[in-house]
Length: 260
Image (cartoon, rainbow, N blue to C red; front, top):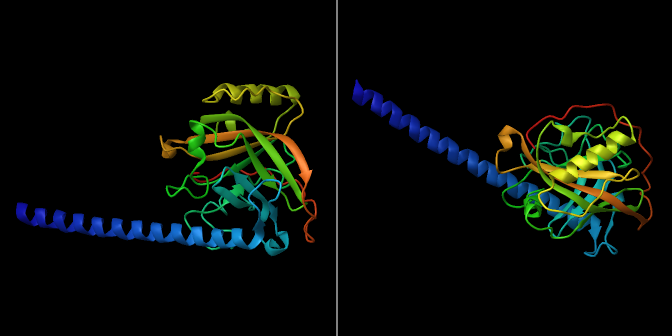
């Protein structure tokens, strides 16, 4: 009997090992596919490395759910998607194909033109450094104190980093609407106090925020997240608006779903 049980356990362990190897190979293949898709879209629609020379061929993105393009440091350069809810692009590429790596996406309840008080942008913390996989570097030292968001109206929005914090999903850090100016200012003070290093930022009444959120390696399953928050410092017209662009209506309130 003991030998029979031992054989069963041995066979079960082999099956688990094989299954684990298969899932790992599938994930690696998926990561490569996502990298290829987004490398192709970068080559097709973007030009220039310098913020003053970078433009987006918005016409090539017509008919997709792309609402912006984001650049953070030297490695993050992606279209920003927005779905009808926050589950859509958690594990789908911009072309609609399922992929674990998903896409960079704007919270479904935030204004697509980034005019809200606090626009929250999500991306996976990928081990190969893709998506928001390099944001963790900002916990030690910022590669660049600014990041940039380009909109199909032809504008480039420059954000200065005000806070780099370890936060918990679903907490005060993820507030995107505020009852009044006082509440908004208090929120900024809270986030600045949470920053792991002193950015020198001060709370302001009339400012737009963008919060970049990704999973933290210290415990993503327990809701730990990394959030980099920037204050809008400049809006500049850098190219002609997309021919298909038109202002969008305010989205309905939507709850965040998924582990990101």
